[in-house]
Length: 197
Image (cartoon, rainbow, N blue to C red; front, side):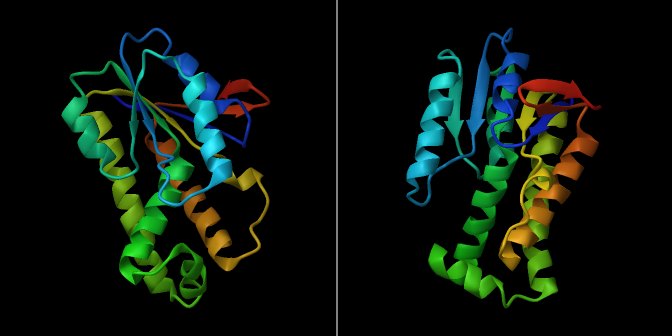
């Protein structure tokens, strides 16, 4: 079985719509990728809002690493998975990989990354794509029903920094890959879902 991809801008209603797609499933695992590796008051408030909004009966697994392994281990336990969201998972994964390689703190990462060559940047892009390929492959191999939520980053502002612009391009490529592999794709605008695939 393939998955459904739901995209849209910030506060477009994509998460609520995604949850509605699984309202009739008996057991749902909500994979929340907003794992707090670094203190962030604003993000913490967003996480709490999402926690309160989702159905109490759903199980929540908070992680952004080894999601494919988690699905393999639990695919017989849950009727469906909701992964929310691609943007945060990719962000967490990128900073996790970079901080591990550089052995430095978050504040210095942007300065160091600015001096990376195109080849060095492609290495990180390859690692991130590898994770998404493992997730989509696992969903299909385990015949799992899944909904994946992402942000339509091309509709937002152009970031001021070179790292931000590179990362926006990377997210756009990830979204294109996920949309190509998905069985269905919805674009949510002002709380109204439009089926585009």
